[in-house]
Length: 345
Ligand code: FES
Ligand SMILES: [Fe+2]
Image (cartoon, rainbow, N blue to C red; front, side, top):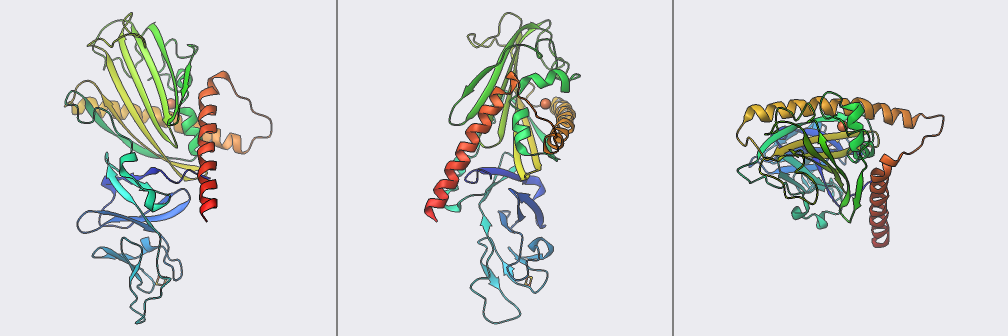
């Protein structure tokens, strides 16, 4: 079961056009395309006649013509044409999903369409700040349940073993973690004081010498992770301090979309408080992140397989407290939504 009354990223906006793109979200097959004016459309990817995927049909104006017998459907999902007979059957309709382009992604609302509210799409802080730079990031598909990714993105410790050439530095193995939970999700964080700057960030920070470093790992329900890294000259960092002018801040946004129970679409982007117009910095940060997230993918796919096929017990460690809190909070939301849906039925 998934949380349904929420926005998920279905695809990159740039991947949607005047073609029929088949995607799968929460186990549902969906076809997406753009109308001639550019507006995105998402429909159930199954013709109601013989369930041929509509993505195997063709676009005619703003509508899809089924590739088997020509039933035609537009953005509402209602049948607009039935070439083989005069009367359009009243049951000839497919499900239509609300979709919105925002932040270079196509967001899809998987729940009750009447509840879709664009203002609930995550806001990217500093997106209009001229002093901040943006990397559009990347995407990949992971053969693991999305909750292994939310676990990972509430787990600052794993960088010490998984990202040895990028995010690891002394302190990442054993500095204690703080956990905060609220209605939006869970934050696991820690400051590490007087440490070296890790390799990924060393060419980016604007000061020399040791640093104080914040790892802020936040996941919002159901599956958007906000990962904030702050570096200040040693002795100037901490929750109780104002950040100095030469502090380096990078925020990575991770959009995790369950394709089904064992596959996840993973899109990310990053912004930073330096080098606003430096395409080379954007390209290097994106490439470094892509390498690191590939390291995560290998581990998490093997974790998914290992947990699915386990023959002996597993255990939790103290580092899992944040991710377990998140899983519990998300399950409560899913249960509440399902109960409300059942009561309304
Ligand atoms: S399967 Fe689509 S019209 Fe027959
Ligand atoms: Fe990682």
